[in-house]
Image 1 (cartoon, helix red, strand yellow):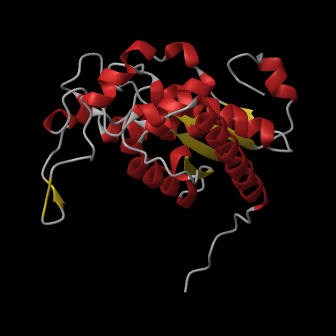
Image 2: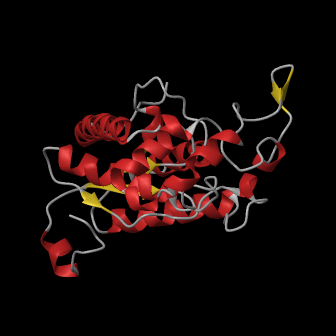
Length: 244
C-alpha cells in the first residue's frame, strides 16, 4: 500500500506493521541527470522491493531533501543540516509508528545520508519508538561498475526507472569532464569538503557505462535484497539484549 495514493480508510483497514520510507536528496548529478536522482532511485527501489516482498508493506512518501551541502557550488542543489535531517526522519518514523507501522526500513539513495540514518535508526530502536534499519540500494548490488556520483550506476538505474529524465545528448560531455575519483586525497585523508573542489561538472565516474540493462539488473538485485531484509525485520525479536 502506498500512502500517497491510499485513503485514510484504506490505512485504517490495513493489518500490517511494516513500512518503507524512501529517503533521497535534491542535488546536482552532472549535466545529464536530474537533481532528484537520489529521491527517484530510492523511491523506485522501495516500490520494487515492496512488490518483491511476499507479505504486506506500506510505502511512505519520499523524503526528497537530505544532507547535501557538499554540492552547494552547483545551482539547484538543496540541503538541510544533519540535525534537521535526523529530526525530520525520526518524526516521520514516529508518525508511522503511531499508526501501527512500527517496523520501518529507510530506503536510501544518497551516500551523504548514510551515517545520519544509521544514527537515527539506532536512536528510534533504543528508545522503543519504533524498530528502524537503513538500507542503501547501491550498497546492496554486486556489479563491476563503480558507484561514483552521477556515474555508471546511477545513470543505469535512471535509464531503467525514469529514462526520460536522462539528457542523453549530454552523456559524452558528462564523461569527458568527469573526475575519476571522489575527493582530493593525501596521506589517506580527503582534503576536499565540497564536490566543486575536485570535479568541474559534478560527475565522478563514467555515465556511459550505465546501460539500461545494468539498471534492470541492479533494480532486481536491490529489490530482492530489500525483500529479504523486510522478511528479517518482520521476524525480528524486539525484546532486545539484556543488561550484562
